[in-house]
Amino acid sequence: MAIRTRNDRGAVVVEVSGRLDAVTAPEFETTLNASIQQGNLRHVINLDGLEYVSSAGLRGILVIAKLLRSKGGQLRFANVRGTVREVFDISGFGSILTIDESVAAALDGLA
Amino acid sequence: MKDSSHYRSLAVASRVDRLDQVADFVEECAVATAIVPHRLTVLRLVVEEVFVNVCHYAYLDGEGEVSVGCSVDDDAFVLEVSDGGRPFDPLTRTPPDTSLDLLDRGIGGLGIHLVRTLSDSVTYRREDDRNILRMTFRDKPVPPG
Image (cartoon, rainbow over all chains, first blue to last red; front, side, top):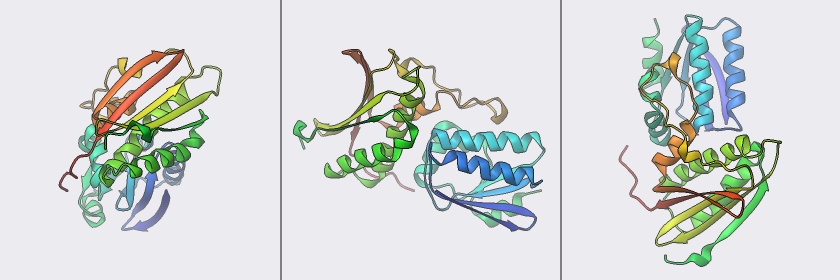
């Protein structure tokens, strides 16, 4: 897994690529936690390059989503496709998370 | 493809940091039997869920051994994951309520729910003091999208 963050229009865009699995999920959580602790409350997670997510990855996403919600923050996802989309849908994440077609659309959707 | 002589197995310690080794091994076995690429990702996911589950729950006093076996039976790719830990049938777990709101969601049971949904069959048996979970995968056309 590779994870990169950049600032765009007052939000943090997080690009996650490769595999989000039991080995890499802790790094995902640590990176997002650090960003939230720095006071960033608006995040867009771009899954364009993500090939794979397992229940361990979903657990990491859920932890971050709950943390952001408890702080009144916002979280949107972009480019959820292929097997990743399939796993989101089977697990019900497709309906509990906010998913947009593109990063631009996700940034537009942030209040 | 009716050939059970394709049987290969790998035994590793029940540690999550062995995941890549185990998943790569199963992928290599599947490629040899020509399972289509879409199913390879799904296969990797099932391997992870089952292997990590064993790492977390099979051995109460820490670490043990996990064995992964691959074979072909009646045109299906067969994956068996076994451990010598306490008797435990993961298929008895209640499926998660995937309709609950985000804040009410627990994540427990989601891994085995993915395994059930994404493999063509899953069965558990206890044999020679080992837990054995057997999954089968059949070649399928890649779904649209």
